Amino acid sequence: MAFHVTGDLQTDSGGESGTRAIHAHKEARQRARSRRARTLREGNRGGSPFGAALLDLLPNALLAVDGTGRVLEANAAAVRLFSELDGLVCSNARIEARTHRENEMLLAAIARIVEADGEAGTEFLKISRPSGLAPYTVAVAPLLGSGGHGLMGAVVFVHDPSTPRVPTARQLIRLHGLTPTEAAVARELASGRSLKEIASGLDVCLNTVRGHLKGAFAKTGTHRQAELVAGILSVPPFIAFESV
Image 1 (cartoon, rainbow, N blue to C red):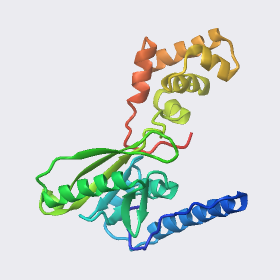
Image 2 (image 1 turned 90 degrees about the vertical axis):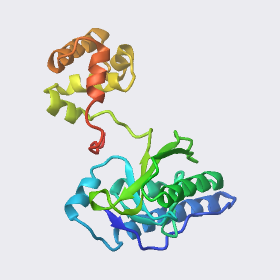
Image 3 (image 1 turned 60 degrees about the horizontal axis):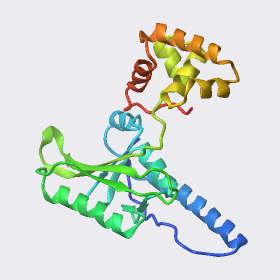
Image 4 (image 1 turned 120 degrees about the horizontal axis):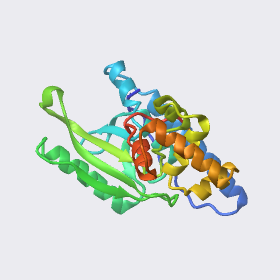
């Protein structure tokens, strides 16, 4: 669902030392994550339930914000992203980057989009992550009212490059009629692994992997590994993939 965010959400801070303090800090962070998710989900819900359900199918975080960065609505992916406390958070009901410089850049981009009253193009920026994972790619665009008239605020898209975009084996079986093993080989290939690595991971010989690959070629109408991988990765990314 999409959510109207009305809670007063706080970020975690602290620099405690010692084993006991570290454990207490981790527990406090986990409790804070649960509170954030609950507050976002229990906000005053509005709009079309049908439209909200569609937004929740998006694998990327999607938020509607006002000119100050106050979060008006967020899809399920955004709720999950905020709960991770990894680069982007929701503090005092506003979207914030964890570093001061990046937060200034993010809020400035939002403000420029809103102040331009629909005349500005999309702005892009990177948001680093304390976890060390690849930075989020953030796009900020005007959020127009019905019929494209009347600026309502800004829409913020957040792409997490560390999130798998390779379809699950179940999806490949349903889409192309692959066997479970053919689907597993195809997924591993699309994830960048060599045939030798796939054989080792599946604990089979290289010729067995080649046999399954040949079956995948026939069922997907491809003839080369590059074609197969391109076909697998062309599965529409706007539908949230099942958990692997």
